[in-house]
Length: 141
Image (cartoon, rainbow, N blue to C red; front, side, top):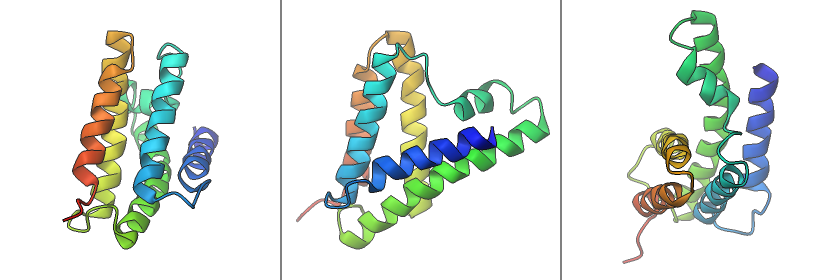
């Protein structure tokens, strides 16, 4: 589980910081679009192992709960780093707590996997992406 979490965090970092010429909010959007594309391409059979364990088993075993929580936090740390950059750059709302924004993005992403799996397509995930980005994005006056 720890190796998987480290690998997932490395994937997040690659996706969110591989093209630092793009604005952070655009990198977050692209990251989520990539996740949607991967989910659809693999017929929703490849979601995050940490997420699956946290849903299915973490409530039954304290060690597994702690381990999955720690792995999710590795991913959230990378996501929060990108959010903070976006808040400093000006593309992400500064009135929101950066960790809460990272948790919102993560929750929306993984919650939409469930709806996508049930619908058999990525349309719900795309709607969730649009709503989430719309909420966190700083509007130009």
